[in-house]
Length: 574
Figure 1: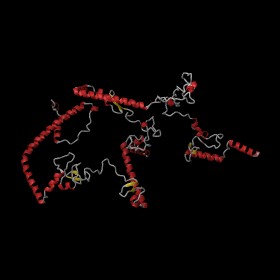
Figure 2: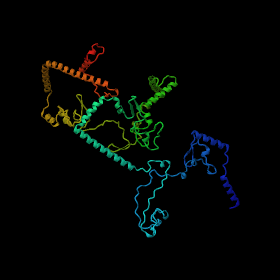
Figure 3: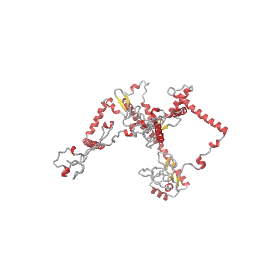
Figure 4: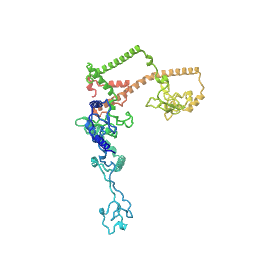
């Protein structure tokens, strides 16, 4: 190599370490324009050597590497991130000192590298704590001491050193649970034995009678704390109900999904807007809690938001409406706006069709029916069952459909006769009955009881068949004659019973009126008792039977009704 080549190489090495040359004005202008476009989001962000985007708003003195360190001078943020080789590694959460380790089997021969005094492998002679022997284990080969157990060296961070549950054994908690369950079981057995003894001696009945007697005389406010409901706290002194922050039995939002990448929980407002089960694949409608946004966009909240938006837009256009001040006026205005909007759309559609045509394209049948083909791939077997693809969706119902029982070929309700439903296959009018088939139709058996539901009109299946075989079919003339005989018999009975029926009707009416009067007295007593009870302790009336009152009940109500305008009203109860 010549001296000139060495000089040239030296000059090139010096050039590599020199400061970069100054950019031209055109390059500087292009660079600034690119930076502005990146800040506005119109150009893609710059990428470092790891493939990560660099925020264009980061200053140049942070993103750029000094020219004397990296000659490539490519912007990066690697030097700003924590360096892996400088990060301290801490012990895992499950690592802890071993307790109660059993001693290993003692060696019988001296091992190379062990303590010369006692023969253990875990320390040397100078560190041995045993009494110095006259003849060490290295030379005697007897009395070799067992190896000590060396504990691991734990390296923990700030939180790990102060963790109160470090080294806790979960099996210890299960022992406590088992102990408490045994104590609870023993208490229950003792209580059951005590109740049986009290029932046998008769003490329990005396105690219940005394409790009922004492409860009537005691003050109502004494049991005010017993009416607490989940999520409410009743104050007997101020007589107000205070709503707690949340029901104690509810699961906290941040405990729904412990994955750190799940929905964000804001501890200040106690809000979790997203669905915590979004990454688990569960249906939001089947989950107990699907985020605050799910409740926000369900029910009438969407229509309420649309009404509020319409109120703002109408106020900007000069209409004096407000959602809270005049909601009725706003609702009527919103409905009329919707009607006018639909009419305008229809008129616009008709005008476009009149001008350009094309109504036949809108009235065309769907593409599936027109071309008899779809993009959905479905593969069928030779019997018509679907092998691949998705079957046609069937409308869901909470009732079981097409369920045939007791040998029936038709469902209950497929037959109607004389105001009653029945089975079409056998004309039986009794639900859950066994099917008799065509034989039931021929014999005219309409009531056949099964499973213990027998009536006076029930006829066994075999007897009905025998009667049908013995009796010959009647002609129309014979059937007419039988009907005329029955009519004559009924007329004779009506004449005899006409006189006695009037007296019986009057006696029946009097009895009904007596019953209605006693029932009205009981009702008035109940009303008086209810008016004395506190409003908060009155029972609900939603489960009582509601029906139209009879004539006797209305007469009893009129007789017992108190009239305050009557001057003799004060002497009624004397």
